[in-house]
Image 1 (spheres, protein in one colour):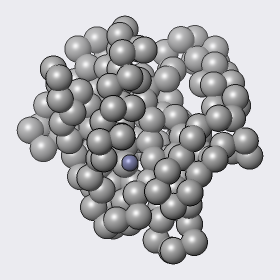
Image 2: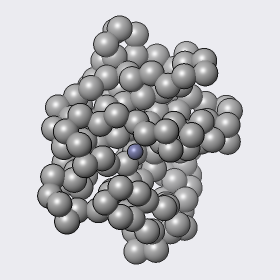
Image 3: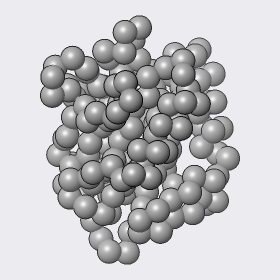
Image 4: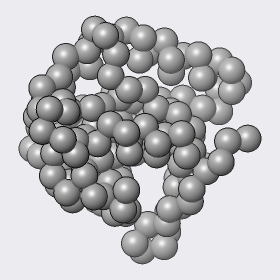
Length: 159
Ligand SMILES: [Zn+2]
């Protein structure tokens, strides 16, 4: 078992368990220097039956065939999906695609219109589960999920 950190939503209704290696990746890839391009990847994990508890077991990070600039990214490398498939198989289906993460070059991240549009299409493609989205800022990272038609911030945590 890998070490995990537990986060609780502001309203106390959602618990998120994040493997520390994932937080280490976010810490390492956050855009705290001008030359660092936007970082991103998929989240891999699972949730309980009523979506009150989520676990983020692993994440992917930018790969050779992806494209990114300081303020945009384009997830192109097919190995992101292969990584998800591998986790799904090895966990006997308990761990799979759970959402996406990306970085913002601002201390406390705020989702852009493009982010919200992208998240809506991720949710539409995965109607069988609740998804989690993470934006990694410089001093904090924030987690979001969709409630009805809108995205709500679950929590804001320091990095
Ligand atoms: Zn963004």
